[in-house]
Each structure stands twice: as structure tokens, then as C-alpha cells.
Image (cartoon, rainbow, N blue to C red; front, side):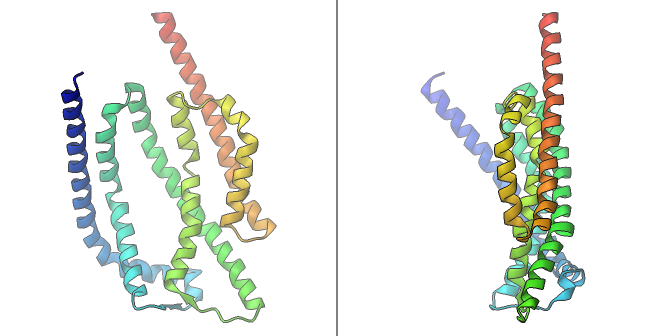
Length: 250
């Protein structure tokens, strides 16, 4: 290919990327209007359920209220726009993927969304209340007054919930990488001791500093890793069988 053709191809990709980014921004802005409408309702709901109902939310800056209002609205807009965003990203990257990689990516996208939602639910309904209860118990034992800012409350919640939601993507990521030949069950087996060490560190960072809480987070993470290894073996076995059938047919 000539240099001029390469330049035209690069410019074409950049033009397409810019076009898709503008489409994404347009959809996000439209969804943001709905987010601005539901933001106060979401905030009132979170304040009505434990542990939000157990405290008085305060603001320590004139900007705190606006910041939380916009944060919730933007989170809502991104959640609503996520299918369209994924579609646009898929439309841009699929041209550079092999047919096998395209099929694998499309197949695992729904599972990725499900795993993310499960991790989000586990973080919010299990680990977050447990962490808040522990910190609140320590605060009261020291005879301190619990005065929480709304920005600090949501920051504490996001630091716990989001890492767990991302960690629950591990099985899908491992299956996809195994499907396209990047990972193998043998490699995962060799990495097990290092993976466990990383999981211990993650569990200690996002859970209260006590053994029971560490175990309640560490055990699900270990199960996720072992499930990932099992799924990798299944995908790898099917991949090898398909390769053998294709080779024998050829």
C-alpha cells in the first residue's frame, strides 16, 4: 500500500471515530435530561434505605449539592446510553477483528452486562452495608459524633461498589481471552498463587479491617477466579475440538 493510501485510510478511521464520538455525546446529552429529572428521586430513595436512612446527610460546600445532583444524573445518563455506546464502539472496532473474535465479542457482551450488575448488587447490598456498619461501630465506640457529608458518603460507597462490579467481570474476560487464544487453562493454573495474593490485597482494601469481613469478600473473589479457570477449560476444550474437526475436514 502506498503512503498516500495509508494516510487516507488513517484519516478515514479518524473521521469515523469522530463521527461516532459525536453520536455518543448527543445521546448522552439527551439522556442527561432524563437524569436531571430522576436525580432527586434517586437521591431520596438512597436516603430512605439503610444505611442512608440511619444518618443525616450534610453538605460542607455550596457545590456539594450541585455536584451530587449532576453525578447521579450523569450516572443515569451513562447507564441509559450504555447499549448505544457499546454499539458505536463495536461498529468502530469490528473491522479490525477476525471473524472468530467478532463472534466471541458479540456472544460475551450480554454476559458481561449481567456479571457487572451482579457485582454491583453484591457490592451495594452486602459489602457496602457491612463496611458502613463496621466504621459506624468504631466511630460510636470512640464516642464521636457521626456527621457525614453527602459527597463523602457517595465517595465511600463508590470506592467499594465499583471495584467489586469490575472484579465480577473476570469470568467473562477470561472466557473471551481463552476463546481468541490469548489465555490457556495452564497459564491460569500457573498464575493461581499470584492471583490469590492480588485477591487478598483487593479484599483487604475494599472491606473493613477485620477477619470476618475480609473472608466475606475474599471467598467470592476466589470463587470467581476458580469459576474463571473452569470456564477457561471448557472454552479451551471446545476450541481445540473445533480446530481438530476443521483440520480433519481439510
